[in-house]
Length: 418
Image (cartoon, rainbow, N blue to C red; front, side):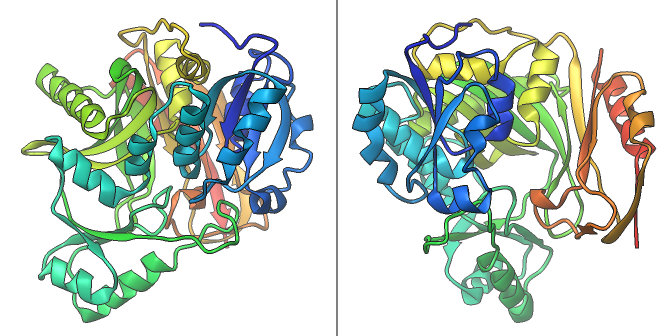
């Protein structure tokens, strides 16, 4: 693993504090430039963010979400200092990062692949054409389309180009009333701090409701070849909103299922034409095999990168920079332990007390125990990833031990609400 030369810079499209925190001190001082939407800089109060990290030189305001505005910075950025790599910092930045990398002649996803990864309608089309198993699906434009597609059965209604499970709903059955309600909730889903104020175009899907255990595959890809892969077992909350409750990796799978996931992710890379970067593909394991739910072309959320680093002894965020800079990387083929995360829940209401955090941190194998709410704050029912109240992370020698440890840590923490 190498780091950028002192006279080169790494450009991030989208401000990701967790990423910057993880690489701070491991890359040269002032070697990172972040491109961020002016509205998001204002909403998230990022005007002084350059002072928060030694590696961060500055934040450059520019439109990039559903916009080519960031491309106008290519000449200015490369004239100031050589650009070593362009990294997508956030989900909505994937197309802009790929386009900027292409314009600068640097490795990246490619513009075509990035557009498919940001639009599930396009992803369904190209992946199915490449032999990847998909559910039955249809783009929808209103309640009538949902009702017609469902035809009395169970369906999933979701935005085609949003993030973090925002607007995703699982419907056990559909009539005119539930179709209208689902359309209203999905089409009106909002993310105030994550998107600019200008109008953006959103698309929507109805899909066949699949049943089976859920997994994700995290893969590092160089010039179309997978150089690292991991399979994660995930748990989602029951009910209409499939928000992730926990992850365990590497997933305990038999050899045949492991091979099926390996074949599926390679078929997906080939179908999308993805070149270089990181993929986070989500699947449901049906009786027919892995079936694609969706795929992202940036570092996954939910602390999955931290879990991978704990299990494999890697530093994936630094490795991704090396890949996108065209430098060689050395990655392990197998994990040396297992890791897991469990997200904390509480009854909806006003938080009155938080207890047990220190006790959880003292439990065997517990690496992290963090609560994101405090007394006086509101806890909402889970409708997206933004509604979770905190998390615990644990490691262990095997999946059974690690699962028990993370559940014990979860049970030790109590978030009381009124």
